[in-house]
Image (tube, rainbow, N blue to C red; front, side, top):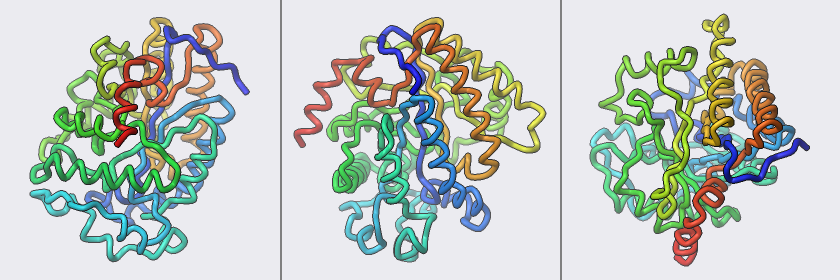
Amino acid sequence: MLRRGDSNNSGTLVISLDFELHWGIRDQVSIARYRDNLLGVRQAIPALLDLFTRYDIHATWATVGLLFFESREELLRGLPSRIPRYADANLSPYPIVSSIGESEADDPFHFAPSLLRLIADTPGQEIGTHTFCHYYCEEDGQTADDFRADLDAACRVATRYGVQLRSIVFPRNQVNGEYLAVCREFGLAAYRGNASCEFWKGSTVREESGWKRMLRLADSYLPIAPTLSYQLSPDEACKPVNVRASRFLRPYSPRLRRFEPLRLRRIKNELSYAAERGEIYHLWWHPHNFGANLEENVTFLELVLQHFNSLRDKFEMTSRSMGEVAETRAPNIAETVAIGAAR
């Protein structure tokens, strides 16, 4: 086991993964089109957990609540008391719920209890929420009461499986500031906000644009955005802590393989900057991003973790989940968690 520093003043690597399977992309990509990536999650998650164990990496797995269920029958019984009525009806997953498979055995695209048990059994791994239904907090038609019902359903199914949710990642990074009070009601101590750069901010379907996607792609290889590591400000300690994102770990692309050294250097330089200044560096991606080209993606990530390990030795940089950041970097959050746990 590799040594992990304990200083609250040292730099911190945070890793979060948006675990959603087809629920997270069903309004954009069909199963047929993305089948290999979705099925590849079954190999990607064990590979990631092995890597995290070897490098003593703590991570948050923000999971769509619909993935917890063992069967369709159980899922139907666990639906929230009210559902969002998006202006764009295609955004809602509920019309397809009755047509999914019976269980994980015959529908690996919509169920994942075996993978969640594997994550829960691995030391240092936090299971957070990606909402119950991959809920879009900034789209027209939904309300705070709809969101409250969604979080209630997410917490209920997680609790049945022995998981107390402490962290939330908003789907499509649509952070609705008015909904943070609802998160506090349920004892959620941390959320992943957006990087402090305009083209990395979450967008509604209507607002998303080609130029944003182009800039995000370029920024993965070249220093376009400013340095995205940070320190928590004092006023973030009394509310769900904004453990905001630093960088999306873009997956390996055969078409862009000649630029892989640039992508690696970009992340290593940002990690070094955070370690030297005692800042937080938050890396995130989806397990399905590793579902294809698994070997190349794991090899790349291991190079990143090897660099992190050298920074751990030199600067006592730490690895923490989102929930652990809320506990160690913002201890006043304990009061918030206690209020939520009393619900």
